Structure formats: C-alpha cells, structure tokens
Amino acid sequence: MPVFFQQQINETTRLGIWKIEETEDFFKNNVPQHRDVTHPKKRLQHLAGRFLLQFLAPDFPYELIQIAETRKPFLPNDEYHFSISHCGDYAAAIISKKSRVGIDIEIETPKIQKISEKFLSPEELSAFNIQPSASVTSLLTLLWSAKESVFKWHGEGSVDFREHIRLSKQHEGDETIDCLFTKTKTGLTIRYHYFEHMVLAWVVS
Image (cartoon, rainbow, N blue to C red; front, side, top):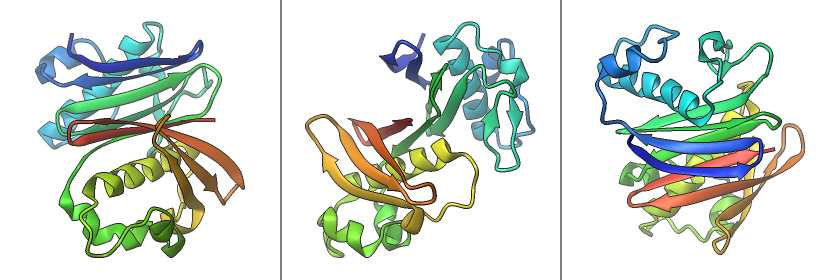
C-alpha cells in the first residue's frame, strides 16, 4: 500500500496522500471513474483520488459522488464533506463527517514566480517579503497551494484569488497561515506540510 502520508485531524476528519504506483486496471477494479477523462495520466490521478477516499473511510459511498457545475465533486446527502487534489504521481484527499474541507497538493516549479502577482496582492507580497528578483519558489508554491485549498473549501466558483483570498501571516512553528475569505468575511486557518519539492495545504472550517 503506497500510503505516502496520512493524518487524523480530529475524530471526524482525516487526510492522506497516495503515491500512485498501481496500474489503471487496479483502480478500475476498485472504484468507478464517474466522468470521462481522456488523458491517461489524468485518468490515473482521477481514479487514485477516489480510491484514496475509500482508503480513508471504508464506508465512503464513492458510487454516489456527483459533480457540481463548478466541477466540485460532492455527495448529495453530505454524508461526507471531501476534497481531492493531484499532482505528478500523487493524489491527496481529505474527508470529514462534520466540517467543510479543502485540500491542495503542488510540486514546486520555478514557473510559479512568473505568475505571483496574478494571485498575490501587493499587500501579500509585502507581508511575505517577496521581492521580484528573489528566488522564492518554495514559498510561492506554498501560498498558491494555500489559496487553492481555500478555493476548494468554498467550492462554489467565482473566486478572485487576489481579492477574495487574503493571506496575512505565516506561522512556521505550527505550519499554519492566517487567511480571510473576503466573500463571506470568514477567518480561516490554513494548515500545510512541506515534503521534498512538494507541499500540501488544507482547510477545515
């Protein structure tokens, strides 16, 4: 079982990362696909994410998953709140019986520096001391992942990353970031964890 990382957040919330080493047939024999995914790599990631849901909660009714107009997967009866993310050979998922959740996993890439001003406000660039000429790939990947996790937590689309998801302070000691989701004036604590050249971020409301 290639469980790369897992964490029991509280008695009703759990997350995990699956390192994808299996074939597509392995996953197809265990979980349904739910939607047409033509690219083989993306299809494998898609199936692994749904398999991970079952691993995290053996009674997870994955056959009931529906896709909203915003492309967010959900269960009609909200038996579980959940979120899935993939990158490279990894799939990440978080599930909760009681709380809205969001998760994102990202592999570090220098390309993130070219788009930093598209998802970070001038105030955020200043707060996190990000200079145009500095090499801060790791930090920028974290901040992007943090905002993606909030976007998935919200789950209703129409989110401007610069305007609606405001990051204010990083607490490296306990691996958290303070956030204000301005659309609903909701204060959030984003949690994260670094791996080698990869970062995981998640939100539990």
